[in-house]
Every structure is written in structure tokens, then in C-alpha cells.
Length: 152
Ligand code: CO
Image (cartoon, rainbow, N blue to C red; front, side, top):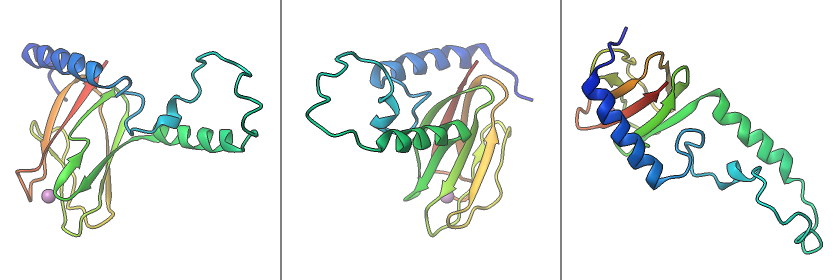
């Protein structure tokens, strides 16, 4: 459907480096949820064990970790996409949710996807099948810009 272009690939790499430098895991953790990294073994096993009683939070962390696997979310709020630039992998479904009172759309610059008008709390999901940098706008408010960078 979408033709990869050499120029876009260069931009894609530049964006990827910039994002990587700014944030540790933009791909796997779209939301700044620190509990998502709680599973990584850092060390110090047992040192803080006596200080705090074992809470029942591991179950909550597991449940929260399952949400990103089902899709990656972009919020539409106050006439803006958040995050405005999102990096995903091929095959990742991206879901936009309109939190505004006003209707919005999500339309790719290259026509690869185009949502219908989305009312309040409506969602639109698109699964990217080819690497590239996909700019998109809200056709109702063309000043609303977003980009999804899809990596192989
Ligand atoms: Co709009």
C-alpha cells in the first residue's frame, strides 16, 4: 500500500535517534508509566524487604502491562494529538481516542488511513503494516498534526 522512500528512511532514522536520546523506551512504553519498568531486575534482592510489607501490587502491574500489548494509544485532547509523535513497530495497532467535545478525524498525509468523524470518546484503530514515517492531520482542523513512525 505504502511505498517506502529513501528520504523518509533517513528522516526516520534521525527521529529514532532523537527519541532514543530523549526517552528510554518510547516504543514499548508509550505512556510514561514507571510501573512498566518495575519488572527489570536491578539488583539488591532482599535489602528493602523488611522495610515494607509485601503489597498486592504485582497483580496490578501485570494487568497494566497487558494493556499496551492490545494496542498503542494516542489521545486527542484540546485540539492536539498526544503524543504528537509516536514510534511503533510494524503490526502494532494504534488507537486514537477523541476526548474533546468537538469531533475530530485522523487522516494520513499519504492517504494510507482515514478515520470517519469521531465524536466524544469515539476511537479509531489502524494497524501499520509497512515501515515509514506517517504524518497525519485532523481534516476538520488541519492545524492538528501528528506523526507515527513505524519501524520494522
Ligand atoms: Co480536529
